[in-house]
Image (cartoon, rainbow, N blue to C red; front, side, top):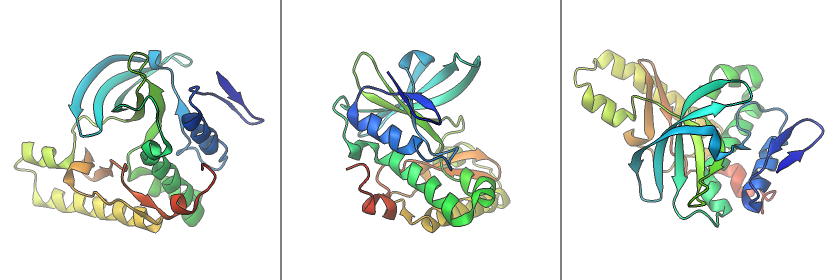
Length: 219
């Protein structure tokens, strides 16, 4: 099923909670990053289990975008027992949308794209396992994993590089706070190693946004 408006069309899941959220984010014409889409499960290949947490399982997969012949390695976060998904289960995606929406308004499009667009993990949308009916969040995959494991496995990582990485983490945390978002579960396991000078903040599932607290559009 597709949803059409005057500016674009996009696929929906058939679940009212998910679809209302997708339509809500897609209506923001000022954002290129932050809008959420539904992606058919058959667009993912070579799905490989990576890890399991208390409420989800993480997979690695190849996203085959058949419409433009491009492939991308991504991570899929399966939400356990999410067949009857609630808006609370989508908090991670709502925080992601709120962050980009608020940052682009506060700092302007140019500064937002140059700095604020690169400090938290990128979410692309949501898909659904056709067997279990559980929903899965689509996000960027980082082969080096989280900062805790990276530094443990690279014992001789220099202090200079650690300090550069610390600056990147502090900048990311500042940008999140500037957007009136509190992470509430901030530790090295929720920071991904991107490269020698860049860290990515992830796992926004229990974060809190002042926008979400006041937002009645999805209720």
